[in-house]
Image (cartoon, rainbow, N blue to C red):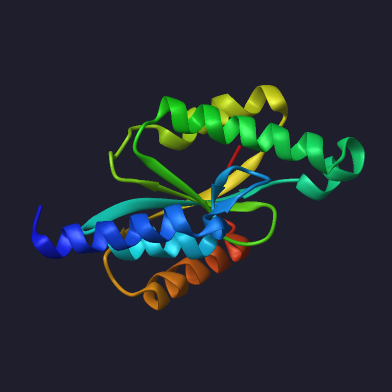
Amino acid sequence: MKAGERKNLKAMGDFLFKDYLAKDEPFGVLTRPALEVVMSSLPGSNRIYIVDFQDVHKMNSLLGYIVVNNIIRKCIADFSYKYKGIVVGRVFSGDEIAVLDDSNYAGLMEGFVKICKPHKLGFRWIEANIVLGKSRKYHRDQLNRLSETLRSSRYAKML
């Protein structure tokens, strides 16, 4: 690892461990600002998946926020445990997350489908290859663009 890369990783670590806002409590994932820091601190390129959970508002009205958040948190925790090395962060509102996959797992989203299905948690997603290590603004714009593409796309894959 080069000196510049060590400096970036140290800055990322300082941000994540000192900033109490780095973790999104309801889902147990990185907040969007923390996700942007991770994306700008890592070198190379990765696959990214933007995931939009379906019917979360309806589930919240039927089951309550705490129950639904616990279901989503459990699914994400099981997913992160099964697929080591992925980074999960919040993108927008209560029903969108991003999954960074630097290990290029085959069938990653299909694995997430299997984890979520018993909980009747549906979602749709898009996949893209992205370049990491650029500015936070660059990555914020990428997340915005991908999220908008997912919301407007009829080609998104769905559970």
